[in-house]
Length: 609
Image (tube, rainbow, N blue to C red; front, side, top):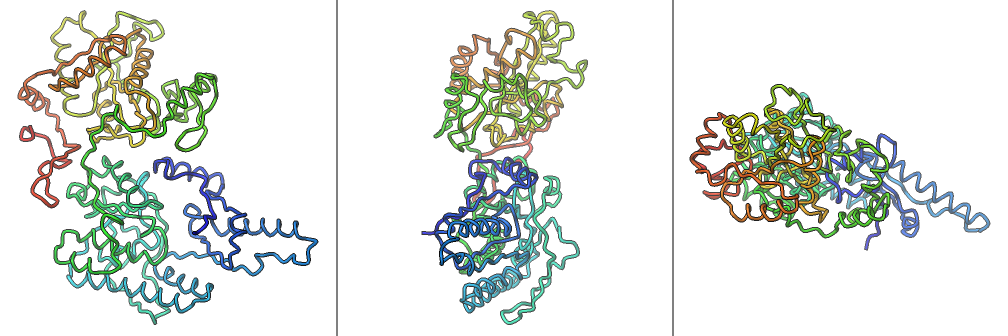
């Protein structure tokens, strides 16, 4: 059994990609290593050869880390054995070799290097020979059909997006494909690599570059035929999960609409510069030509093509319909926080990560929002700049204050300042998902307002949207919260976002109650006048709201402006509005293969009803 000699100071399996990115950048900015080396375990292992790398300080301990650790141990050994005749350091004969391959040519050369230092040079030569023979076989297999090279975008990271660097562009080329980002300027895309096992002086035709952060606009403009999510450090299952988290970003791509988004074990087949890169190149070819029924059987005969479903597969973006009340939580931070808060403790240990987290009590002692996006901020994240991506508690994502004179339902009442609670002022809260029914509910409220006496039915309106705290996706709509923010700004209606934590057993209604309290404070009222829902006809949903929400939220009246309204009337109203609605989630498939009856991105019309 192999002994782990290194540990990471962050746990990537307990964090989102966005958080990992922030933690890594902060560590690098502070000149701190992300890794620790277990000196005692290394001492016990008594290695003859230590192989390390100088290519990336993010992926593994660097050469300087290893040298520092060995120096520390040598110093320790010298001080403890200075009186002994056997004072020779156990590291004196240890070979430390740092590898830094930047392209496929140099990756192949590392096989020779490792074979030599391990005193098995013939094995190194054979590994290199097999490596190039397999790559050339893959290239010949694909080019035998003389197909137009498809554009394959490989994403090494997705939040924020990074392109594939170093050897990845060459891998895409060997697979008979083109990198649509074309980051390497004036690069010959169609020339063959004149390499064989005896040509030791082969020169790479690619000017290697490190993976670069790009924008989602870059991704959209590149218009890839195929997208392959192969994030560094993650296996197939994690990359499948993370690809679904950025569905709202991918949805505008042609590759998404044509059902050509894939994920794979990026850690094994792309991130690590070893023999498995051949398998990664084969995965690129297999997903790129997935629709070619003549070429696919030939590719699947290649012994080095990794198995579908184990190492790679198509991403299924069909929505997972989950009620926020039904989340399964194995480690509940809500209970841990409640206990610590009641004991007036400043911190508690998160059950999932072991990290220390400030309690709400601690924040109240500070007396203000620190602007860091804390999990238990009691101030509505009022000083947090990036609320859309980092808020952990209910917060005003938009206060509707761009133009008070133009806003029909503004919560800002200049005649009654917020600190003077005005119980005559009416504030309605619309549970808003960003879908067509939510929009039609607003239209129904507008019409009701226009047809009523101004003195009887003047009210302010606030949109309330719940979303997954980690993915920022709105359940069932499969829409990112930033889409709803854009809608709220266009409508000039205040929006409160309510993050729902999957790592907490805090009840949905309790979270909503926090949001209602925030709205009442901001609007300067003791109680909102109504909770408004866009439900059409599902009795069990309305019954649940009537029982649980009305009772637990202090008997606030519930309104259903669209309830039992004939669907044709709703469609007439939607068409009259002139607003174009796009399908954001669909579970319907028909026709077999990749053809779908209802596809994400389609424009909604009466035919779907």
